[in-house]
Length: 182
Image (cartoon, helix red, strand yellow):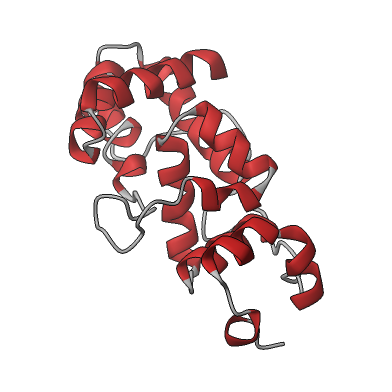
């Protein structure tokens, strides 16, 4: 399975689920369990690769500015949510985290909240276990998984935030003094 097929499966699940997260996981699970085991492993490896690609200090800071706070686990679940929204949104936000403000919706509403923990373990891992009876899905790649990700550097300071996130700061009226403690 290549990345184009991965995104095709995600896009189909978005369309068929109508935005319902439980339905989306069910659609993807059903599609994956019908595939050969190697494709399930590839899907999981691609997901891990994309989660790692989105593991940047600037994206994390954008999430903090939009949400007001974001823990390590919260950032992991945010990145799963971001993948679940499809290729176009994923790459737009990863390439320019300031654009998160254009799609963030009402993060106080559970249906819109940018967190999707189940997008990981209820899809490829569950399909793999169903097909093989084994709980641990192997990997063909060597990308670290959370929590063993490497350090990603120091978050941007106030001046850098003003340059990196003008849309977020302006549209959400973010007070950087309340969020940045260094």
